[in-house]
Amino acid sequence: MSRKFDANQQTAQPASADLSTTLRHALALNAKFYDDAHEYPHNRRLALTIVLCAAVSHALGGLVISLINRAGWPALLTGGFLSGFSIVAGYYLWTAAIWKIGQWLKPVDPTYEDLLSPIGFAYAPQVLNFLTLIPLLGRPIQLILAVWSLLAVTVAVREGLDIKTRRALVICLLSWIPLQVTVGAIQVLMQQIS
Image (cartoon, rainbow, N blue to C red):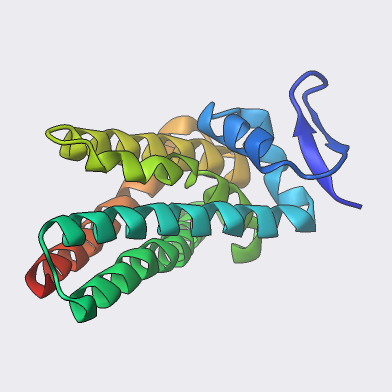
């Protein structure tokens, strides 16, 4: 039986999973939603769906920019693949880094698999990445989405590891900065290809 979060009762209730409801709770940084995220196996697929939607949104944005710049087909395909792949790989790497740092700071913690759902839900702001195509607002929107995702992951880590907000923010920042450097390097590579 699948499950989803019911905001009225503040608990996870049996029901058919709904992507839009999940996105709404994830975007609203609903702490109870993130706390319950790892309890239901179906949520891992839903979290991966959100990450894949974020990857497609990011790849589509990159493809449109490459088309505007009149890139050739090999550059379009390579850039689109790298763009989408960077989001999915970033999800697994960021989760692994958070899990490892969390183990160092707190000996009793959830497994890596337990963190996949809440951190995947925290990628919900990245589903809006296609908005970075708006002229002159692309970079500010990208920065807002990155910070929003960082806040969402902080809530997910706080609830997932059952720690204070300050400690969760430290864990997320320690793992977020190298991730942003890596994604930035991939973006520079994509610009050179196109």
